[in-house]
Amino acid sequence: MKIIITEKVNRELLEWQAGQKEKVHVVSWTAEVNYKPQHNESNLYQFMRKGYSEYLIKDLPWIKQLVLNYRSIPGNHELEFKDAQNNVVIKVYLRKHTQFVEHVEVMDCFGNTLSNLIYSGKNLAQQIDYDTSGHPVQNCLFGQHQKITTFWHAHDKKINNIGMSLVTKSKEVFYSRYWDWHFEAFRQIIGTFENVSEIISYEAPTLNIDIPNKRVLFGELMSKTKRTKTKKWIVNFQKQNFWKPRNDVSKAAMAMGYTPIDFDTPYIDNEKWMTAQLEKHCLQINSGDTVVWQYPKYSPQLELNMLNWFHNRGIKVASFIHDINLLREEPLNREHYLPEYDKILLSSFDANIVPEKFEQALYSLANVKLKNIVALKPYDFIIQKPVLPATYSQDIVYAGSLAKFPALEDIDFNLTVYGEKNFSDVNFVNPKIIDGGFLPAEELASSLNNGFGLIWDEDRQNPYRQAYTKWNWPYKFSLYMVSGLPVIAWSESAIAKLIESENLGFIVTDLSQIASKVRSISQTEFNEMAANAAEIGNKLAHGNSTKTALKKLENCQCP
Image (cartoon, rainbow, N blue to C red; front, top):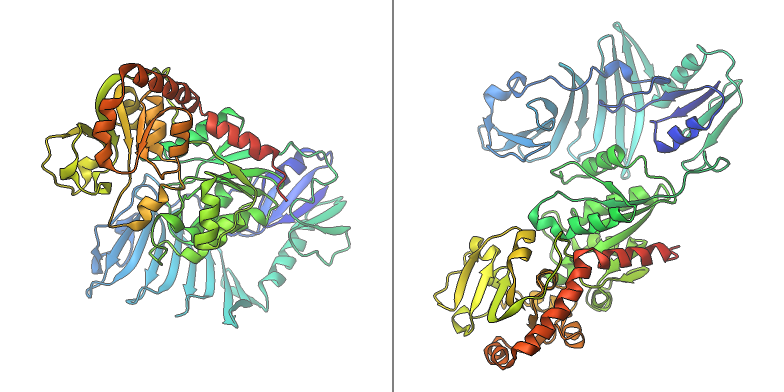
């Protein structure tokens, strides 16, 4: 028999076990409350697990003395409770789609965390207490007949373990380091087995024991065994209308054999949540695999935590860039967004699928140099119907927010607006502008079948917005292409050159030029433009841009 000592079982261990002719037993030490050991596994902290929490909010002891803040987030949501001075002092996180309490964060009146309480079954399973600097000072794990408390001390920005208390049936034993108890427990478990041929410490110290004992690191177990073929992974998004560009990337990638990665929703902006998500959904990703991360997904702080987690395991991460906040708006520190973290993040991806004009803008304006760039053609807009050329009309449609227009009263052409206009604070009196209402993206693509599509961002309150169109592929362009519509765009936009070279519409320097230009285009000229638009639209409707970029990425020799 072989014994493997590990914090927890991951995909590499499962693959390694499957290839062993000799019997294997796992000894693990993870204290995660919801961790489920295998049938051939002994876990040191199994004593404190009773299953999923059955603790209801009404059972919490201090609820009657506090006031509910009436703030919650769907899913693994958070409820806040305030004290008499209106300070948030309790945050309660419920198990997804239930009323059962998973964990409770206790805070002081200044918002500093005092304790985190985690529940299992009908009991408290773990309590972590913190000092005023936010450093853990003790971690208690509770079982029916056993209690373990580890003690910590912060010094010179390092957290050091200074001891551990083990209480069993009212008898207490103190260890100067928690590893001393781990080693003792490992030896006791191993002593219950006969004919142990080897002990393998996986990412763990070796034991002082009279049995062959070696230490291996992540990725080394399979080095002398036939490894499974490296895999390709794509980060998925919720199936919602405003995430369509990202959902389409996922669809195209999965059609090429990429495996989707789905994180829980909603996200919680702290590193522990991100690490927990990665360990919940990504342990099957192996060294040498490639993950395509759709950027941006969360705050750059959390995404940098993600990137480091993958890199520490020898996993390559490529970005598929949809937007870049460093260029789209003034790079100021905001809640969930720190520009300096964003710069480090973008500089650290192993490769980047991105509209090519972003490269120079990022370097010159933000001093960010991207590695291994794969140029992206206009974004896909996947739909299920064939794309047909639009019919001739001098009418113009716009999909988006009217807040980006400079002077609505001066518009002198027929303009039908679909989408966000209906949810903005823009007020206007202009009979030329018609409210088309809101339609989901794919339904809108099927409804637009005549006239021109307008691409325009000229928010004079935000000087970054118009400059941004010089570098990014506008998603409106893709929508209009799959509708077979010729397009009208700003002459300095990133898409202008493509519109001219492929005869997909026309470009202008100012909105005042549009009405006369539309009147000058004959029906024959329009039909040629519409046919060209439909040809490109059919490619975008089948995900060709994404597939081409991913193919180039796979051939990219990233270090």
